[in-house]
Image 1 (tube, rainbow, N blue to C red):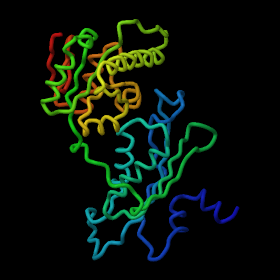
Image 2 (cartoon, helix red, strand yellow):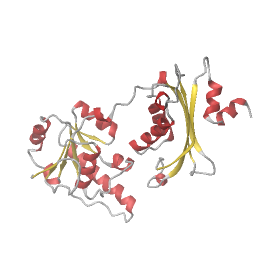
Image 3 (cartoon, helix red, strand yellow):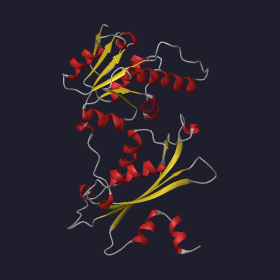
Image 4 (spheres, rainbow, N blue to C red):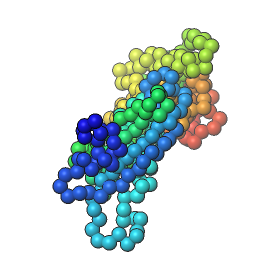
Length: 302
């Protein structure tokens, strides 16, 4: 085995040694950190967890002056495990590559971090470990992600099917838009019954798609209504003052702490969504308000 191949399969610490240039940097490492997580693009990987192993090496700027045995002066190991936990908690991911990139980005926010090696491996998908390894350096990373407190907080509006067909819907929304908060419209399924799959997970998908069909029907009523299905697009739309119509499948299925409500209980599902976005208010138009939620809620008759 050549040195290059040996280094490729060696622990990231050895990779860091091999790639060191100029003045050596200090390193901290996390080895064989195993987490049970739901991740993967295949249908068989949804609804179940698998063991994922993390090996991380962070190259850090040497400290100036004495350490004085003070943990606050160093980049703590906790920062590495916290970065992993934060990347896993934000949303369900399909790809190890995406997860590795998020972990590296969060670690490089730390002022001392200069370069990071991240290796992530699935331990339960075959006879061996299946994984990726990435290298990221401070100079080629994106700007740190915005703090969640800086994100807009919308007014979430649930519209019953009767409310969707009201002739004054546009005028009502104009009034609400004038209050200043971004607006996200949500609906339940349409009037046509959804197919019966006789299988829990399949039925959940079908019921979510039924909601999305109705969302597209609503969007067809006004050129200002744009159907969105990802958190990133929602955040962008809120900043632009766009009136969004929520297509729930991706956010619901990718949620780390998903809703307990069935898609058939659309109001309860929307209440979960409003809590997730830390909405300023949930307006329920033409339906009963949910019995319990964190977001302030008002009911409006059609």
